[in-house]
Image (cartoon, rainbow, N blue to C red; front, side, top):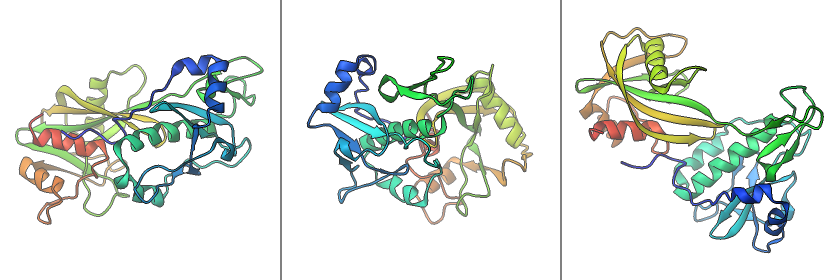
Length: 289
């Protein structure tokens, strides 16, 4: 089974550097240290489809320490304080995603999520005072109430409901014509992964799910989710979609899914691209995983 996109990175996050100013200064003054080139939140790729890096003096905002790759310090930069910030995904970025080298995709995912977090968390959630970056960019601290804030991920279940040799897929109106994919939704407080899979499947499609098995996970940096891929055993086949969530939902056979993954013109639907964990999930199901 192909590894999900944005995984398989080689970054040494070097947590010790975040806590020791002397180590951080050594990384910042290392002549080999490099800064990730970002245009807003979009990366730049060179002629070989590799991420573009530059010197640390090119940073317009505060430098954020990512870690080491092959012993070389790697940084990105937070948005300048007070600058309008948009975390929206651009068409240019989506045109790049299929071109990323796996290790670059994982590194970009970490950098993008961290920069995005700084751009959206400039004020204390406790007292609304402007906060300051600390721990080499892996936290923000309030000078008023001294609260400490750290980047977090939002867990999302993404799941297939299977019934015999068929699997349930849905589509949302913004998706490309003919695209069908796995259902998905955020975990709610006080809820297990299995409970979230059952609740979301029932809410969106009217299908009740019994046993749930885990398949894989994926960091999804738009802005900072953790996709948790599962397969659940459907207890019925009568679809009743939530029109606020889905445009349509259908059952597809294993052979139909296999055609879609191969991008066969005879496929009855278009599958998610390979960098999406929905593609990994469908592949696992087709292979009997």
